[in-house]
Image (cartoon, rainbow, N blue to C red):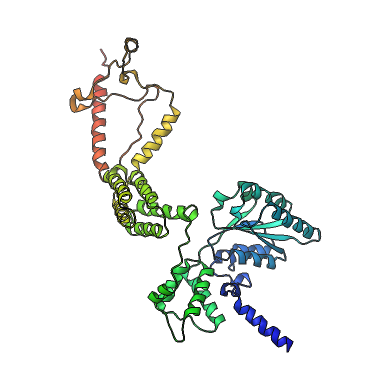
Length: 443
């Protein structure tokens, strides 16, 4: 009888555990969504096969299997598994873990130390891992949702391999739902469109889709099936995985900038709306649009900068949500404008030249001579007032004499810069004629 009670109690305890925990994979082969790591030819699969497991940093969004994979690695390689979180641990906790690992090593067993949110440790705390990694006391597996290049010490990164975990694609999320339905013994009460909505709500997070599925099962009455609209009412949409101060912020603004540069207004609007939806500061977006207008459109369409700046001011005047339309208008205008980075490139080249030749004085003929001494030194001598010359163009040389003429700005044959190129070519012709007329002749 006691065995029966124990079995019933165990079954009840199992059902009380969250679905995501109950369905945690028991082998690397069961891990879904990371075939480049855990598939037949995956990096981790090969490491286990060759017995060459080393310290690693798992980088990826939440719910992609980082903790689960670390546990499985320890089991498959007969390593002791220790887990700590950088959020709740300090130097004293690390010392205890290291001491326990050294004691195990003395008895011939190594330790895999899994550190969740490792980027939360400061630089000094990160440095404390280095000695125990180098002497083999621990194999470190750190998990982070942030870009390791920005958040982790170079010394730590040099001793650990960074492996990227990808957000779960729709087919991987479907696999998880099918496993959940098998475990629960009945299908999710969702129509096809609602099931698709559930994928979008999960946003590539396997833990999230299983948690959402549990909520659906809890809420559904007998013989009830939810459509997409009812699902939205039942489960308030999960906020996008987006940290305005970290990687998500930079990834989306980078995607927006590249879509604009690539003259794709549809993709540009999509990323713009992603950022609005995630709660990004619209004035930050406005400032970036101004930058895009200068960097990627430039003088191919001078109105792009005017419109971007006006949109930023319009948002500042109207606020949200009315002002967001002005930013969308500027976004589409810049995306559809002819593209040129000629001014951007010219500016960088001119800045480089300025730094290399910063000690050179301008030629004396273009310097003012406010005193008799300066006039006697030749300041302003020979300067021609362009408006008094034919075509209002003197063709003089304005660069420092030791530097010689340089060409930084080369407008392409696109947009308004086509007209600028005609002007520059015309002035170059006049300059050549002027130099030819001024050239000394042989007697």
